[in-house]
Length: 408
Image 1 (tube, rainbow, N blue to C red):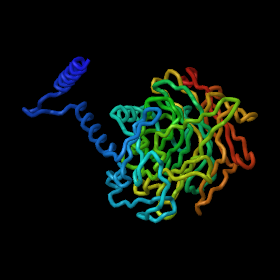
Image 2 (image 1 turned 90 degrees about the vertical axis):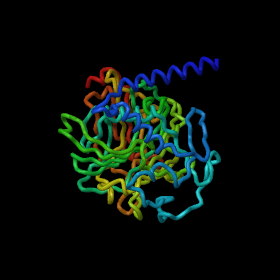
Image 3 (image 1 turned 60 degrees about the vertical axis):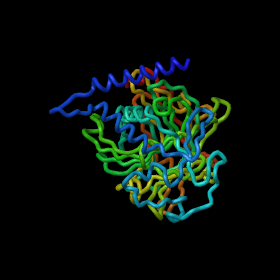
Image 4 (image 1 turned 180 degrees about the horizontal axis):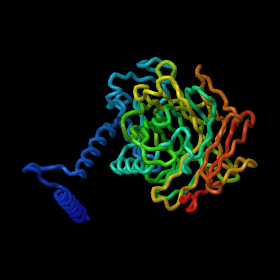
């Protein structure tokens, strides 16, 4: 058996050498590096930056490799914009100040668990971002479904909601999300922070419900009604230096192990993005409620220009994409929304925004608008209104997707 393993390694190295050699040519007697080699070199460089030497490594029940990394050595600090950045330990603390945080028993003091990034992760994420389009302030595309409060010139310092968790089956090339968008900038140049629940075999290697977050700056080429493409910079999860993690228990890629059971029981998670008034950093917090939520980490203000003061829009909804464009994935619980039984529908409750003084305010259902694609049998969204304590402003949404939706 060992002989076979060694033979395979030799064979693999030989084939790799042949492939590299075949991609190499010479210009004026000097070796020229091919585009493939350049990509390989860049990926290896990124992996060295992202995968810091761990103090401890943990393998989760679903097989994720989590590296416990010194909080001051995490990938974010390789970003030149953060060269002189001082860590803020919670949204209300002074940068550089230390606090007595509750440390997970699985990790070690002053370390944070970060999901190890693989070569496949980077290649797939790059492919995913190339094939998907950014959302626009007035987007009407069929792959986005959302509700937002529409008030002229209103400024937001964040958004929050409890979103139901569902166990969906999606194909290998499909991605389905429930999420919040925090956005700013003119129509042709959009800055955004996104957080929520994602099911994406391409990004995570399975279709489990997982926590995701991203920041981006999208510059448009062409009109949004006849989409021609856009130039984007930013970062998905921890796949490039940007987000600073504070939590010793939760990180991007965190699996939500409890999922709602249709007609029987609902599980949800509370997510909030808020701007620290003392630093301008944009914080992500997560928990079972607003009262029990704890900081996960933040996107430093140095990453943004348009986000220095506030956001102009907060959207609540989801995103469905299939790279093959043959059939779109389900959203939410995979059923069309209805208002009779909330154990039979996907929902967002406690829909709130963060006002200019840092307080949480319920969204006004009468000021909200919804956007969806042209076929309501694919995906739909409805504002349920103010449902009282424990629910407050609520919407129901989602749908089955399918082949007909890919043609819309």
